[in-house]
Length: 181
Image (tube, rainbow, N blue to C red; front, side, top):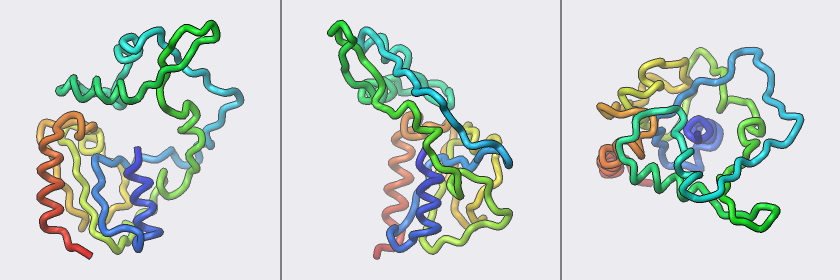
């Protein structure tokens, strides 16, 4: 969920970056005129009685087929922390801020975007999966048409979990030719 935010940083603080690789980044922001998300009450943490029960509930968002179950299992396990129920029994909860999305301030990084691409003074590459919603349902983008796009075949949105070796190959090739500062 960080690609659009990193692009925002590249637009406003290019001196802090040497380059930017966007991995299946969607620039699909909220609809024009949509209200800020609000929450009148704190969101309750979903607790699980066992680590296995919590891992079994883990889902990729957006949903996609799982090709490397060991990687998804690892991500799920690393996303958990052990806590205690009021009666002292162990429970497992997700390591996340349940109110993260409402806290995000709307701005450039969440759209809507200007009709013209935004100028950025650093090299940018956009890596996408050919079965990803980013490719299949393109949205208006602030990226210039000059930004190279590499599409990984037979790959969905979660490239690092779907085709990790292909992503590593792209990154290694890129780092071999990108200008060094």
